[in-house]
Structure formats: C-alpha cells, structure tokens
Amino acid sequence: MTFFGRPTGRFSNGRLIIDFLAGAFGFPFLPPFLARGKDFHQGANFAVSGATAIDIEFFQGRGLGDIARVNQSLSVQLRWFEELKPSLCNSTRSCKDYFSKSLFMIGEIGVNDYSTPLRARRSLKEVRSYVPKVIEAVSTVTERLIENGAVDLVVAGDPPLGCFGVFLTLYMSSKKEDYDPSTGCLNKLNDLTRYHNRMLRRLLEQFRTKYARLRFTYADYYDPVIRLARNPTRYGFSNGALKVCCGGGGSYNFNATLFCSQPGFNVCKDPSTYVGWDGIHLTEAAYRFIAMGLLNGPFADPPLMRSGVAVDTSLANQNFLKQKTLYHLASTIFCIFLLACGSVSS
Image (tube, rainbow, N blue to C red):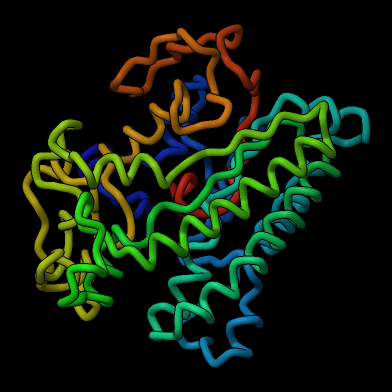
C-alpha cells in the first residue's frame, strides 16, 4: 500500500523486518522459496502466513483442524531449505564454507500455535501446555540447521499477544485488573508470551554452551511492542499502538467477520502513525522500529551490528553498512518462519 504501491503478499502496508535487515546488509528483498525460478544465492524466504511451529497433525488431533489449516509448519520449511541446498553448493566442503557466511533468521515462532487454540477459546492452561512443544520444534530445526553448516543464527522471541487487536477484541473484558494500566494490553496473554520467551532464551543459552564456536542472537520482539504501547507518541505513533489502521470497526478497528482487505473494511490515511496494521500484523513503521533495535540494540542480544555504528533511520534501499562493521559477516540470508520474515510472494 505505502512502500511498494502494489500487492506483494506482505501482510502490512509496506516492508517487513526482514526487508529492512536485507537492505542493511546490502541485499535485495529475499525471494520466497515457493516462487520458482528465482535466484536464491543471496538468500531465500521460507515463511508462510499462518504456519505453525508444531506440525498440523497435532492440532487436527485436538479438534483444531478447522482453524489450523496451513500445512507448512517449521519442519516443512526446513525440508524446503534442505531441498534447496544442492542448488547452492555441491560438496560438504563447499556447503560448509557457503553456510558459514550465511545468516539464518528463525522466527518469530509460536504465535500461530497459540492463536489457534485461543481463537477456539480453549483454556490458557491448555495453551500454555503447547509451549514446550513449540520450543522442542525450535530446538529440532536449529540443530538441523547447524548440522547443515549454519554458524550465525538469529532466533526471535514472540511479540506480546495481549497487545494485538485480534486478542484485545476476542478477550475484551470489563475487569480493569485484566489489563496492564501502562499499556492497555491483556495481562494473561502477555504472561503466556513471557513464558514462551523465557523458555526460548533458556534454549539459546544451552546452545551457546553446546556450540561455543557458533553465534546465536536472540531477537526480542516483546520489548519493542511494549515500549510502543506504553508511549506511542514518543516514537511518532500519534494514533496509538492498540487500535489498528486497517480493519472492520470496533474498539480496536478489528472485526473477526470483516478483515482488512475484505469488502466493507476501512483503512487509515496515514499508516505510519499506527503501530498495528490489521490486528494481527504491524505497520511498516513499527517493523522499521524493531529492525533498528535489532541492528543497533537494544532488541537483539547481541546486536546484529557492532556498537557505535550509526544506522540510517530510513533503512531504505541503501547499502549503508559495510561488511567490516557487521557483527554477522553474512553474504546470504535465509529466513525461516513468520513475523521477521513475513510471508511474501514477490
């Protein structure tokens, strides 16, 4: 809508986090793996909108098959990567060299795994029981990527579910104690997200001990959204963080029966003044804010760049970063999974 001026398959009004990161590394936008005939030597995007970390059979076995309809889970996306591998390198030595210079983006992971039972109004106790299974899926795919030669891996945590229009609408409450007074977000859903992120960070610490020569970066998507929710105007979001730009009306402009882009929806005049795009995804401006924090800190541990290097706030179509300034000396980016990567078709 805003940046591209044409449909691109991105669930936002413009660029996603991975688009800004690719630009910072001096790469073109990553081509989606399912767009056959593309050149993947500088990276690929394996993400699919609506995909879960856990295989779909898990949800079907729990009576959630009508909601979890996307059969491209994390394991499927990993298989796509392994199918692509022979076209990129043809020997153990060449693959080791190639992937040692690549940056692997994994995540965010788990939002769809949790939103599936939440949309079915399953208990939070049940949803919470899914977290170890999601973390196990992350562990499995990370180990496989390492076996394939990955050296630099960025694993993203989840954003605060209680701050998104879809859940603020679905779980709207008349009880003040259900909301964080500093943000307006739902406490119980954010507690769930924090639990997920704690377990994920614990996993990364285990990997750092087990694979001391590899580099693992935790990308924090929780803190930036909380910051924006607490003080949106400070960061230029004059229309706030909870009411979304594109939707079907209501307190948060989210309507489960009238999604953004469906006949009768409404869209704001200036998406850059909103944090939320459609109640499920963020605006380009919000994604830019997060990407900036991943590159320079404080939203990445460690930051993707060495400290003290200035970043152009536009992050637009410029190779303004030199390889010698990067923490990860990447020549290729492979993006696996959802929010950071987005689901793109062109």
